[in-house]
Length: 479
Ligand code: AMP
Image (cartoon, rainbow, N blue to C red; front, side):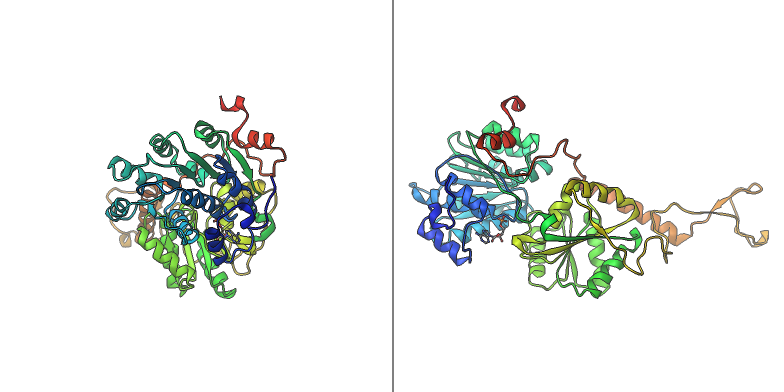
């Protein structure tokens, strides 16, 4: 295939080339150069590419061109883009609108967490393209407020994330409602067995394209780990933000509750912070993200799920307040910085208990992360307060005259130990237990999935036959 260095050379229409030029893009990214001609030719496409490579334009531009080439009698949903998260859905819709600004096509975005009625109204008025998360789209299908029987192009974006989030059964249900004759495009950063099986089940002789990730952490992002006691992480984070004068920091915690608590504590420390996670309404999330992008918030605390698909231009600092249980999540997290070729810094606060997690991450990346202790935050320093999760201390009975001791319900035997936890400590323990219960109840998505059995090769693949074998598995694998 001849790879063109210009958008015109890829066969895009004047309207699309203009829209792209208005975005300031001067030349196509590798995924765009490879994917656009394939999609324009009407072929199915299986693409190994992740966020940050320009993949959205890679499927949106040729999709818009193909839809624009025919004018059906009345409006119907002719392209469906399925994505795993609400944020990504909103972003993809923006891209479709941006690139399609010189074409009379209408796009709707469908996701949960917001009222369904405005979506129903919009669908009723007629749309050509739907960008949706699977759950809410199924609601619409059940209520018959959307019809997908005229879909010509299906895009499955971030398929591996869909798998992580347990959406594959929903995706299969949606696929069953699409016409058999259609073009299928599937994008995924990795190709675990389930994704290969899914792809093999509905794609027809797909062309395969693979691009190296543009922002390989090893190349672009400076990484450092600060060993610190778990109970001093918040103080260390505040110290780092203030002493380095960080202005825009994305901080990852493992749980929603942890994200809320940390944002509140930082705000109390005089650092403008807010949290973004799955328990917040979509409107609240959008507002918070906007404040962060507009530099009104210095720190955005996020869980892994909420951060997926966030496209924040050239974010300078990412902090892992907690290390993720799944090493791959670390790579996704730090990929938030160093995007589109810019450099960034990823800082991890690592407690003694998290060292094995860091070792697993280093193994995955095949490189070590520099460890640097910050003076004043050395692990093992005396702490002002005991941490609530510590076991209560066993204490010897205080040496007081018997008549001054509190009355007991039963006489204590000679030498018996008593547990003296104090009311404040008791309250802390109760709170910690409540927190643990609440997190177990409200964090269904944040349980780490088991690590994948085998790593997918990321190296560029040389022959077409070999590419297909890597992405789809050999015919024997698929059985
Ligand atoms: P994506 O991988 O689709 O999330 O895109 C990542 C970022 O790259 C987005 O901010 C796009 O606006 C930007 N982008 C997409 N295509 C190009 C291009 N050809 N040149 C420069 N930037 C681009």
